[in-house]
Image (cartoon, rainbow, N blue to C red; front, top):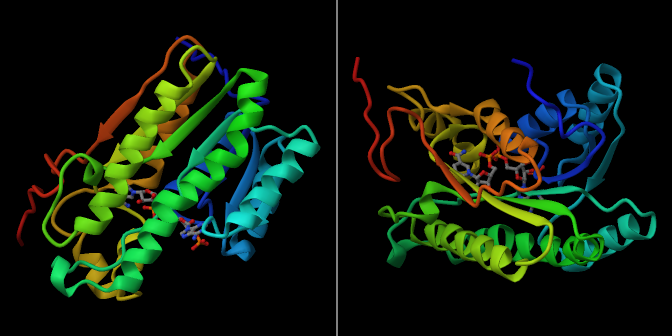
Length: 261
Ligand SMILES: NC(=O)c1ccc[n+]([C@@H]2O[C@H](COP(=O)([O-])OP(=O)(O)OC[C@H]3O[C@@H](n4cnc5c(N)ncnc54)[C@H](OP(=O)(O)O)[C@@H]3O)[C@@H](O)[C@H]2O)c1
């Protein structure tokens, strides 16, 4: 059986495309023949990806060093795209992070602010900037990267949990507000994925980050990217609202079976 390619020629904007799930998604969409708009703060990584993906695939890749917390920069970029009639067919709101693992009364307020500003407000800025052009065209697909942490709370994760519960609410809210339009809305909610996520969470402590993925097989960025492209590749009348994806060894936000050696 051959799988129909409904992605080829579409324009896909991915935030947080410089590593992990975002980078893997860019590679997966490129393999389907989508044109890409890649954003992240580490622009040098995007420069490399552009070179590589444009050489390997017959696609165009546009890159932008962008911090999703900077509202004016996000709005200006969206205005630039719309003025050129480059309205993305797919927006993957992926940029996000956890910072710290602390009891609430010991948490760092700076970490909370960065998580909420990135995971919630950054997602809102990007969506608010791009969505009107999708609505005008009456087609498009918003893919929000939530988390199992947006369905179940775990100890020492309350603020990250709150940010991903917010993503769940925003995903459902967008879906409702877009009732009657041709725009699809999906949240992909992973469990443990081995990316730079834990290194970022533990402020660069790689040794501690590695322990998160020991004793079981975690998901990879490619696993999630395959699911994102699958969801986008479904026919226009199919809308997958929310998908929780866990490694087989994980059964809830806080229950992971680890083999001890
Ligand atoms: N890994 C997991 O276990 C897991 C599980 C559930 C959900 N998630 C979610 O998956 C998404 C991707 O995370 P990941 O696991 O792929 O982690 P990652 O490897 O650390 O990637 C995060 C991406 O977000 C970008 N980013 C961070 N802050 C940004 C900002 N202010 N503006 C623009 N881009 C920013 C980073 O790029 P720059 O640093 O270059 O800006 C990077 O490309 C996040 O929303 C995360 O919450 C991850």
